[in-house]
Structures are given as C-alpha cells and as structure tokens.
Image (cartoon, rainbow over all chains, first blue to last red; front, top):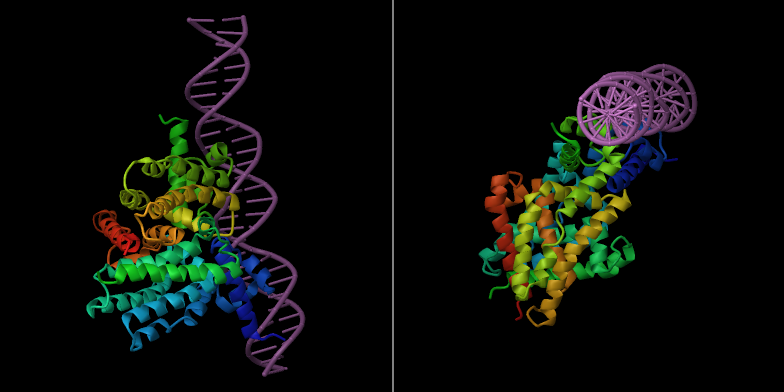
Length: 207
Length: 207
DNA sequence: CAAAATTAATCAATCGTTTGATTAAATAAT
DNA sequence: ATTATTTAATCAAACGATTGATTAATTTTG
C-alpha cells in the first residue's frame, strides 16, 4: 500500500497538472483531490492550504532544477561552448516540461500573490544571470562583440518563451503541432536549437 | 448624464483592467461592477455573461488594432525599412498597453475557453504572418540571408514578450522598473528597439 | 493501545446569474 | 397638448451552486 510520501506526490502531481492547465484560480481543491484520488481534506492535512500546495508544487520542481547552469560557468571552456551548452540544456529542460513553464510565467504576469511571484523570480533570475555572466565574460575577454547582455538574455529566453507559452499560436506560425510530444522532440526542439545557435553566432561574432 | 455607451465602456474598462491584473478566474463580476461603479446586473444586461464581457473586452481592443501592419507591407520600400517599421510599431504599440498584452498571452497559456483562444490566436497570427512575409520576401529578393523565417518571428515577438509578460523578472534582470511608465518609455523602449535592430541586422545581413 | 492517516459531513463565504420592482425617457393615442 | 402606453436602464435582493476549509468520527499503522 502507498505510504504518506506516495500520496503527497500524487497530490503534487495532480495539482501541478491542473494548475498548469487551468491556472491557480481556475483549479478547485476538489478537482485536485479527485485527480489524485484522495480525500479533499488531505490537501489541508499535508499542505495546510491551497496556497501551501501551490508553494509546494513550485518548490518541488525548482529543487530538482538547481545547479546545472552554474556548473557550466565553472568549466574551463570557451565562451562560445558555454553558450552552446546553455542553449542545449534549455532546449531540453524547459521544453521537456512546458506545462510547468507555462504555469510559472502565467503567475508572473498576474498582479497577485507577490510572495509566490518573488519565489519564482528568484529562481528564474538565477538562471538568467548565469547566461548573462557568460555573455558579459565573453565580451570582456574579447570573444564576443559588444552587445546588450541583458537584452540578449531576454532574446534567448523570450524565443523559447514565445514558442512554449503561446504554443497554440506558435503551432500555427511554425506549421508544427507543438503540443504533440513527438513533433516537439524530433522537429521543434532541433529547430529552436539551430535557430538560436545561428542567431547568436551572427549576433555575437565580432565583425 | 452618462448614456448607455458610457456605462458599457466603463464596464469594459474596468473588466480589462481587472482581468489583466488578476486573470479571468481571479476576477469576480462583483469587483468589476464595483470598479465601474455600476450595478452587478448590468453585466448580464449588456454582455449576457462574464464570458460575453470577456469576449467584448478582446473584440474592442482588437478592432482598434487592425491594419497598420499590413499597410507596411504595401509600401514600396526596402525589406530592411519594412522590418524597422515593424520593430518601431511594436515597440510602441505592444509596450504601450502591456497589461492587455499580458492578458491575452496568459489566456493562450491556459487549456480553457478554446473559442476565446482561437479568437486571440487569429488576431495575433495576422500580425505574425505580416512580419514573416517581410522576412520571406527579403530572403527571396536577396536582401536577407537565408534564415528560419518563422523562428525569427518568434525571436522578435518573444523578446518583447519576455520583457513585458515577465516584467517582474525582466525588471530585475535589466535593472530597470518596467512597470514604471516613465522608465518604460524613456529607457526600456529605446533599449529594446536598439537591441532588436542590432540583433536583426547581424542575423539577416548576408556574409 | 496510541499515533497517524483517512474519511464523510459540514461550515461560512463567495461565486455568476436572475429576479421583480422602479425609474426615466421615448412614443402613441386621444 | 395632454394623457396613456411602451421601452430601456437601473437597482437591491435573492438564487442555487461552488468555493476553500474544518470538523469529528473512523480506519490504518507501528
């Protein structure tokens, strides 16, 4: 029989799925309990409240996400290779779980729950700053052209952001079904990767 | 005394503001009525339902938005100038009303109300395809380098998308308060514009 | 047996919507 | 021109349904 940890995870899984699909306010605690096959009261029992559950969903995901990017910066490789590694990781990571990606960016666009927004921001900012560091260092050591580092970061993340979060729109624009996992992995991911590589090469190469 | 049109507009204004801030599900009809200083029943009376009001908010905005981009394509100027005009218009338009921008892209990220999502998609796709056309034509007439046109569109829109929709995050990354109108207009807008111009120049110029 | 986990039942609050009554203005009838 | 009739706009109040949360009782576990 399933132990406490199992049920907690079931609830977290169900909550993440439904929050991602319907938003926080569009998801009822009853529907979460139903999806997780547990009694409603278990949500309060384990997480205190709907807000607490929300927080827990985010923490679980971000905790399994740490590092990786900062590891790249510690390597003794060229700025170009660092950047390529970043693109690689993000093309797989973010796009591997785009429902979570949609969830957190939707939350950032709301003028509510500023404590949760701060939590998300802190976590995302860490990654953004790692990429920024690569670009700034590349400029300083003469590898890259002098560009706007922060805006370049916005372009890298924004391109993926656009494809993933506006997936219905992007699917029509690209002529590919982004919500189909097979298409996403075999066609869209490589395409994003190739585009970003090509784009940044042109953008950052000194004349 | 205010006539029917006035009140309808008051409701639409209030609804757009609150929907943008708190999302559709996070906004009650009572709060809309209160913000607009009208009786709750007027929402059903004029718009049939909360959904109908939502639809009306979107229609009003998109109707006052048409054209402009397709006008650019009709001009007899170089592909470069067309692209620069696009950047210009979007740097002003989209960023001039970022709360609406947040609203529609948040809706696109939800797995709900697919009729409304289709409506938004149709309107946004029109603009995306105009920009795509500029790039495709530029490639065909030899002005631009052979790039991935759709992904380039994703980059243009995505960059702004990232700055606007994740404004709390982008504010910290850029070191500028994007939600402050003065800062946005005098500093962020020109910065986005300069970056996109620089980026696309490098990306599209033939070697 | 005690502690932890789980349940069904219930809570007050809020949700979107509808109601019937009232007002003010426009139109028709005399 | 004055009255009668119809129309549209507005309101407070209430509707049933659903919300997040809690209770007290029961079952499972160690």
